[in-house]
Image (tube, rainbow, N blue to C red; front, top):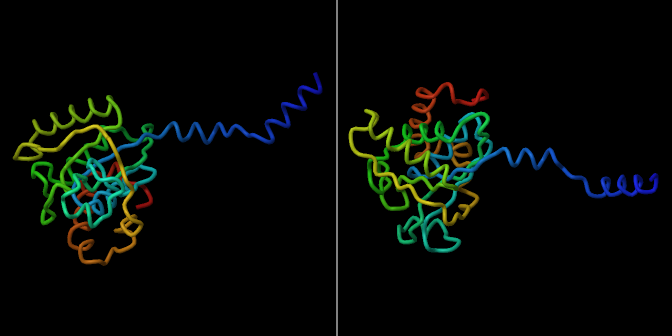
Length: 205
């Protein structure tokens, strides 16, 4: 018996189970959203309480491993998106979509302000059937409200692919707060988010 216990102890020391790490990963969920330029969307969701990581990328098109220059041409079928992990114990997918509806114009087809093209379309790429159901219900509820005067044209599609954008796109606003686009376009969006959702704002921001 003592020999067996020693063997088990050696196995545990050599191959730790890391149960806590696995359980933490399993607690987080993923979401993929497009709402115009991914710099804007990234900056907003980086400040949402319960969102633990945000990454800018491309999704929904036919070209594998696209470059920014390919996507911005509007010919790849991809949308600029963010993929993020969130803690459902802190914030729900429905609440995250409420932020989505309020911080971009979902009624303009393939356009957000001066950014025009299918790469800037409003889109929810759902990761599972539960997200699809919540997204459809959320859009129907928002469309029936007085939030937007025109009908919502947001695409709700299954996630079929995702490609991380180039490194210089990551954490863009935080790294370039004084750049022209950041000052003129992103900063006002952040101000509106902070005004409309103070209860969802990370305490450190």
